[in-house]
Length: 230
Length: 329
Image (cartoon, rainbow over all chains, first blue to last red; front, side, top):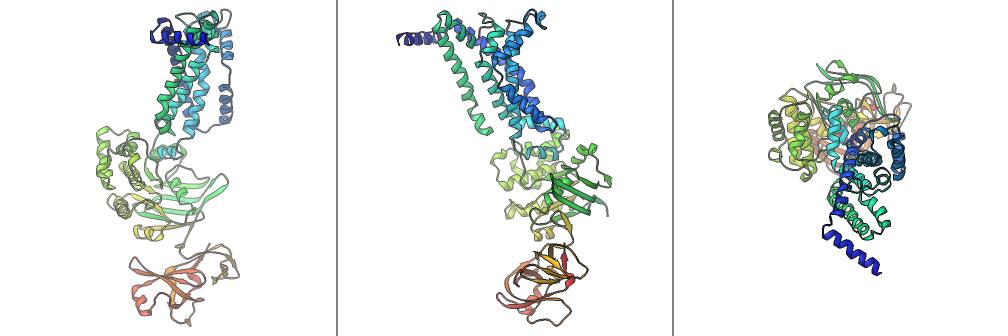
């Protein structure tokens, strides 16, 4: 028990004394996951809004594929991109493996289906009078798209936040593509997983608390949004 | 007379549920036309067709003489304004909504604001511009939607059940706005209503819709039943109809064609039933009498005849009408 209590106090000290090592890892994590989420959302949100407001063949198949991809284990994404990025892989010449860019690409691919699926749901569960109203007001297809985007913006924000939650909390992709390099690709999750084994339990605990803090903060910030989007 | 719409053999179905089957229908330009019919008659579907939100499954549709084609749909939609029965307003303020149609047409900011303010004045919501739409009542929302449609000065204004959510003051304002739009601007107005009286009072022309069809009957005294050998049987009444009719499940009796008398009439009127007066009301300067003859029947007579005949509530009376005063469809 003493071990746990002492480590807990040590972890709190690391946090409240603004230990640079802890905060560097937190910062790298936030930067990588935010970039990945924004990159994915820039494609996934428009794609989701467009697919939801248009009828086309293969829509069901698309939906099923997105559902399946959402369940993709993070380590599988890591494995696939490891194969692509490694020296002998098809994209090896770019030298991406064990760089933040590799982690960002992997995490963006990871969260894309989630964000697109939730964006489709956001539009589909919007008011059924929305599209007929926009059409009768003389909105062109592009204008309809923009207005649907703006009318469902709160639900779409929730979709993006869910994507960020998945990116910041995953360990498989960051570990396999980032390699836990200090100051470069060492994120909260990879540090917790790998540094704890090296006897740095206090650091792991401190990072765990910071990770929870980030996750809860995102949830807490979205509370009013979710309520009014409801 | 110039036609805003001309429908020729138009049919439309939702999945496999037929909603409209119209042989011919003309809506005259510059007039106020009422679409009258009970719920589910196809009024909203017809308005959606007029608003170019749906396309006919079969038949031809013409808009101001031009055949309607899919490739012109955006331009056509911009020439009409539709106010839905329960309209959707976008998030934001009243003025955001009223300006929306103009914004989509690429109208500049200043002119947009002027037209929107003017449209709000016309529906009696002059000071409402900055209010959030979430703070409006149902009737106010409908008036905002009307202002939104009016702001872009469409050639045709379509209005689905305008009077559902309005209080008395609102009804008057909307009636005013509708008739001004047609009479002062020379634009075409089509509105739907299930209240025949309101429709007839406000409109230059009225079209009765029933089960997706245009019927040449006023849809008062509407009965369901079976037709056999020149007799329409409602289950409670056997009504004589012209022998030439051979099919139809509905029958309507024109209230203007009903003759009331204290004693049975010795005349050529083939339908004659004894009944009891259960309601008398004034309706547009005439008397509307409801008589129980096994079924409830409405008759419309002048106030003068009401007095001359000495009719009163609870009195027994004979109801007579010609076989040709009925429409079967």
